[in-house]
Image 1 (cartoon, helix red, strand yellow):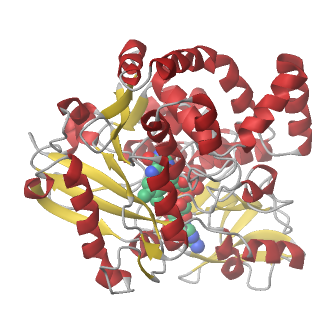
Image 2 (spheres, rainbow, N blue to C red):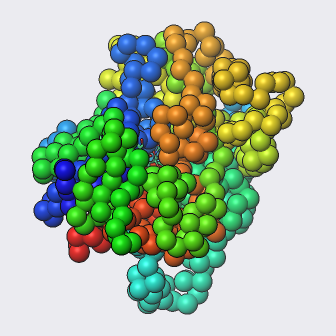
Image 3 (cartoon, rainbow, N blue to C red):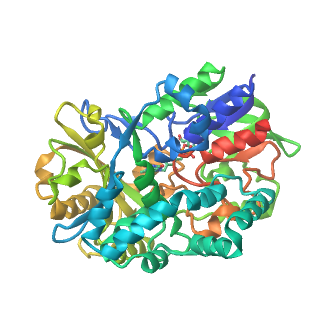
Length: 522
Ligand SMILES: Cc1cc2nc3c(=O)[nH]c(=O)nc-3n(C[C@H](O)[C@H](O)[C@H](O)COP(=O)(O)OP(=O)(O)OC[C@H]3O[C@@H](n4cnc5c(N)ncnc54)[C@H](O)[C@@H]3O)c2cc1C
């Protein structure tokens, strides 16, 4: 029987990062992945036509570039082929009538753009940017640490020492605020509020959801201060480098290998059974980087703790995403040509449009006007398409997994198989309002409904791109469920990591790396 010290279920970036660290500490690691390649939600594929390399899901690698994992392993990752494509013109929003505002790494440029909407907001932006390093240190001390009582007590103590009682309370209030509450308190221009509020929609923080203010703030300030990064040639540059490192340190990444069940003995995980019937032994740990609902299959007799199993069953997912990948002859002909330089253009013209789209999707309705993130990776990295051509990465945030109706009253079908292309037409028609002629430029398109996304990766339940709502009752100490924020389960040696667990979604490798450090003792 094959045996390892640690078995990872799944080979997404969290598992790969955790495996690299354990392998470097001398553990023998094996990763078993159901798909035909590693990467999970980070894959680059020729989805439309030969030579057009699309990031199937994650495109923005800033979280990885800024991660604790990359700080330690960056040089080795680079030696294994990881290359970033830095972005100076990071994100922008377009508004009816052709106006726009965007954030570029040159502060004076961003400030001048904001000034065209509000002199006061331009000054606020400058002072926020100035205060960012100090504030970021406080926020990242929370986001970058395990959610353990001792760690929290240490953070609180250090916060009180650095920021005093009023500063600590102010930070606590900010972390509980909705995007709209913070944006209304901070800015006067509706357009500047929309520019930042769009970042809440990348998670499931519509403008009025408590706990969401931190995301628009961090994205706005981090993009302004450090820029954004994409993967050179595709986001999979990161996966290839991680997988190469695992194997260089004696680990194994096996694809087309679905884990069906976790083996237990006396309340302790001892290995896994693969779908092809093979049994693999794990001496020290089995680490599942799966959506919590998958635990029911992996532990068919339960975890031995009914309260834990119930909380796992109650784990809530966020609304879905629809992806439209386009191979195009030219970048969109935005009403302002500068917009062609940006990595992201948000078609999310107001907080109210975002709040309405979110509410419609939550109610099972296809939004009349979805929020659309237009990713323009070839504006930064032309190597992803044949010379002179481009790809577009369009994301409709948010859509329901189960369709109960169309908020516009136009689409009758309720089945994504029938709705997929029609709704993609609505997304493209919406972009046409701001960039006329897009349809005529399309060479080929590949549309992925929320259910297609789930079919490709079971962790994307109902197309939920963040593997579980990050609302306050399911975040911090409560992620994935109360009592399990430290990646342990009631089954000894069996751990749950990945986007469903603290510190949540995104390509920051947080849970994989923090858990590996915990297991290896540093
Ligand atoms: C459309 C989309 C766009 C996104 N854009 C961004 C972005 O631009 N930037 C960003 O930071 N984040 C983005 N995200 C979020 C980010 O990609 C994810 O949060 C992150 O990749 C999750 O990584 P993970 O390792 O936890 O899990 P995953 O990447 O989901 O990997 C888990 C792996 O486990 C495998 N698996 C599951 N069950 C089994 C089993 N029983 N046996 C074997 N294997 C199994 C799956 O096949 C999968 O490969 C996006 C996500 C989506 C879906």
